[in-house]
Length: 178
Ligand SMILES: [Zn+2]
Image (cartoon, rainbow, N blue to C red; front, top):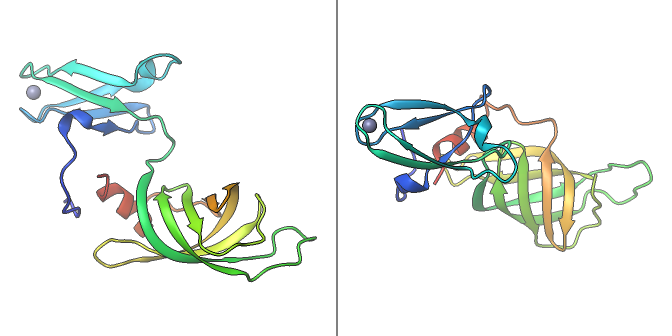
């Protein structure tokens, strides 16, 4: 099932993500044969992550690239909000609010732009809420820890980590890999 109604990714631009055993699976779009490939040899420094193989069954040339990112990260443009919390005992400001635009989402966290200035430092905890652009307009409401701040751009990690299988976000990332 593919929820996405956008243009399908071009076959030759296919991104593969290794499974927990370090293998990637590449489907031949000509004959449907499935190739399981050990991704380890593509991980070495200086090695290309471009995969170029010939189908065992039909001889069709297949190309893909392997991504060793921990989690697939999707570029987004989702609106939401955040509220600051007490993080360190010596911080006095909490409960500040700002609208946000979530620019990317993964199962580990989000990158977002804050619309109003906040008294936030790296390591602070925020409550974030944003709406996915899935058909149900699912609202994600989560606590994050701010990892990096560059001007009004924040990179933050979900805390506790997102459930990799059961959460609506996992579903969203799985079926919206544009
Ligand atoms: Zn084939």
